Image (cartoon, rainbow, N blue to C red):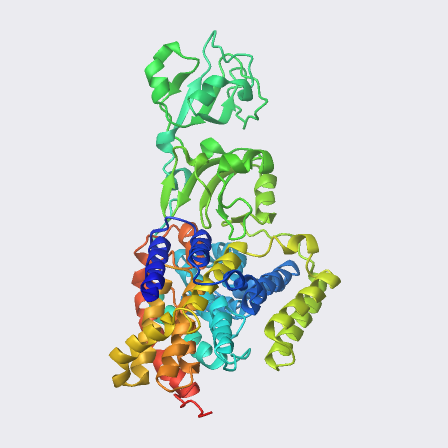
Length: 600
């Protein structure tokens, strides 16, 4: 009966992950609470994920990554793409994937993508190469590069921890390098020689107003004689609020040749002509009796919304943004950045009506209007990535060599076994904080706490499945062995890889590793073999998230900014998945042979 409780809980969690009915970290918290309330795990076991060395190490890696960003190390690697890539598509694709892969081997994947994202638009412009053909390789390269080291991606750490909890030696720092490099090289060659042809070179309209289909939502209106709006500021104009109209530009009757972006304190005058955004049906119903009258049927374009000191820009919501879960109104974007948000695009679909009340998510793209200084301020913030503008925060380049030395010390300490990887990570954090490579006040903002809570709250599920509790892991292992064991360990290895890959398309790769790593260990023990090849296959499978744009935050980010369609990802990713599967089936048994368990 306990098996069915665990399996039912897994099924519900998978469904919620797939349908996105709730945030993944909230689903994980629910899983943890069900296990606690049902008595399946005790209080200490239920919250043990928050003290797990793997979770502690993940937190340290986020902070160490921020040090590489703040001191300009990551920017230097980004700039090398422009110097080395040239204008040749094959070389450019290879350099993009190798650069982001090397970065992802020592920092979190989504951070590497976020740093290089603005660079892709500059490269595309300079090389006259479609940016759509660079963004998917950027995301896929970050996922593949994370497979080369123990700290490259959370599933690697989680699989290592599962080995240690089962009494085996965990993976060392560069145990992943032979298999990870083989997969990385295969993926880069595929994307450079074949995959890039499967990515549509979808030309973007040069006009942002056309890209976001704003034409039908822009209207020029007139403040007529005796209008109740005369003498009132925009902030005091209740009629505009009632009709949910946003004033984008204003032209005075006394200066018809000039227009400007009004502020909330701008006082309206008789004869003012306003370019407004919103639903004009209330204006049409009131006709000539309302406080505003439709002035003309104007053909609007970017020039209508820009002028001296005003520009349009696309900004993407960053992975570690403080605004996640808040709407544009709740985030007070106009007051914080002095910009107007004109539209929101999510997963290729533009949202115009009531979009200011929609909770923001990673990868959402906003069309904003503001001064170059205001857009620059957004580019320097941690909340947004200005996609078509290469402008980074001020970097402390003087500390770049020191940051590299500290990172090398942490990696070497863990690689040689001098200290545990969690200790090495926090030693690096302490040294970076003391030396000013990272600012203490910024450290906590750099951690993706949703990922941390997701991993920590899913860990009790792995505990609940062990032999000291429900034994579900062993029971599942016996079922898998019964169906595939007679065909040899290679078939079992293939089955684990394929199942992990499919599960990862609908749930976090970290959650997939937490769920499947204990099962992989149990299957290996049931076969009388050491678990290393099986856990390696699970780690690789958890990072081959190429079939959907929602399987990993790196995909989500480029999906929104690149204006891709959902089908673009399986078109490019299916063959890559198959190639990675083939390489894994060949390389893993060579590097990690099927070795019988030592008899105690």
